[in-house]
Length: 263
Image (cartoon, rainbow, N blue to C red; front, side, top):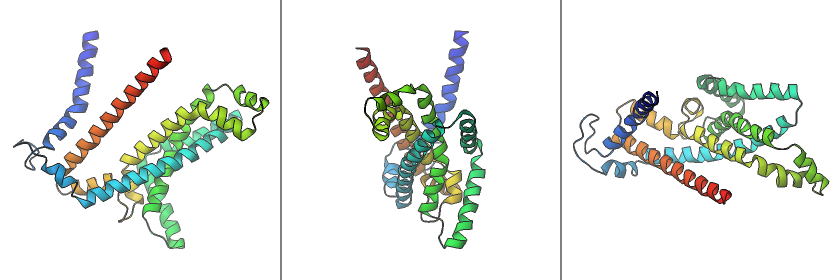
């Protein structure tokens, strides 16, 4: 049974990572061929950093992702605090309402937001662009922050907040001294999840972006409709390496903290 599970896991990992390794290999190919490797070169990486369209889209994506993650983390944390202070029935209703955008297909969210922006654009004389894209990303990021913060409230001792007030803290000071450290892991997780979802979102961004505020997934999609350039392979390789490096650093830090706590 163990041998079968190992074989199954190996096949699964191969299925997941072989396409990525093929992409990495052909990002160093001297020609644009996607089937024959003719030689090793860094030319596509050089051309990638000379491509103004890709660099502009990457900058827009990073700015949108960071801003959306920051605003959605603030709004989602405030919403989680409010929901946590509700009674049982209103809390259940609020959580179900919060979960609807997550379950809802992205195509429905994207089209709905597009129609909403069109409605206001016709009356307030503004067009699609950076603002509409940012609002759209904040909209679908907030529910994930709420989902990450709420479990931390359930894990926290509810008497700590009152105990801090009994010991002389006012409500604001008690919140930042007692409650905030307890829910901080959930806030950080919500921020990272929001940043990740905004970074690779395509469907919602496609319906809510303007011609001057295209994100990287939209730019890549427009390039693949003609012919896939090895520059895309180079860009994907860089993103993959950055993600792997971030995971390795995260694991090293967590292992280090675990060893210090054990000591």
